[in-house]
Image (tube, rainbow, N blue to C red; front, side, top):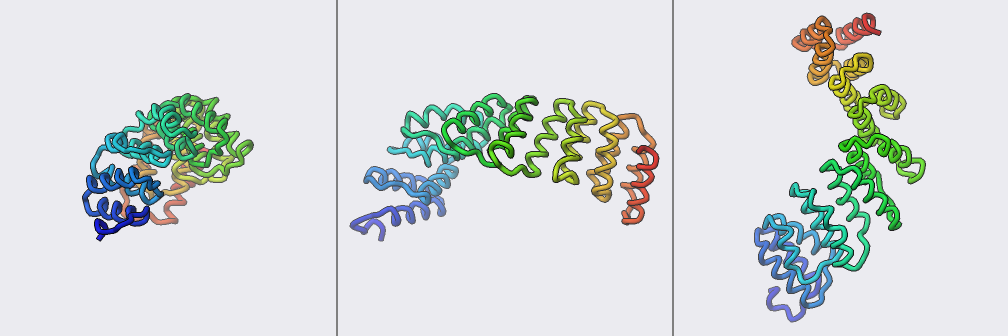
Length: 294
């Protein structure tokens, strides 16, 4: 029926391209897409989505992209997404100048999202900061996720001061709401840098001070850096938050063992082995820890 149509518009092409991609015929989808572009039909968001499907099916996003007779910014963004999702995000940064020269327009917020994500994945903190600076200079507004990736890139590159400045600017300058993920990333950053007291203060002052993941991250850093004082606070906080969690018990037990408190480590291990963990017994156990070590 499609072959017999005298005029093929964007809608009909999109439907057939999507059908080919869904039913396992990516080569046919690509051929029709090329024909569509050669006829001067502009790709729609639906076409771009279908392109991503058959690119993944063929396992060669880059090859398919190079074969396209016309490439829009939306297509470039899909290729960046493809490289990131296929584990090749380290290659993404090289596309920035190519996009500007090929498309003739400045990259948009989606483009920078994937560029900064690539920096976070591959410990390229300074490159991530540079991309954020360029994004803002071009008049684009970073969102909460983009800032999260910037903080992650700083954390993985041990850029403590830079990360702190970005964190402080998110709400104060850019008017973007800080959520649990941003605080968690900062606790991780400070923990990696052995600034455990600062991490503890930030955690306690945060609106998510009862977050299990953040206390676990802090305790993990205390084990690495052998900080007994902050570690005891983190261990008690974890046990108070979720005494019935086997992972919490194992982490707390490991901490006490690392600092040489074998008695407390064994108490936690024995408690972990009990078949019933009742609320009353749990509170008694926490009270005994606080009584002995507060």
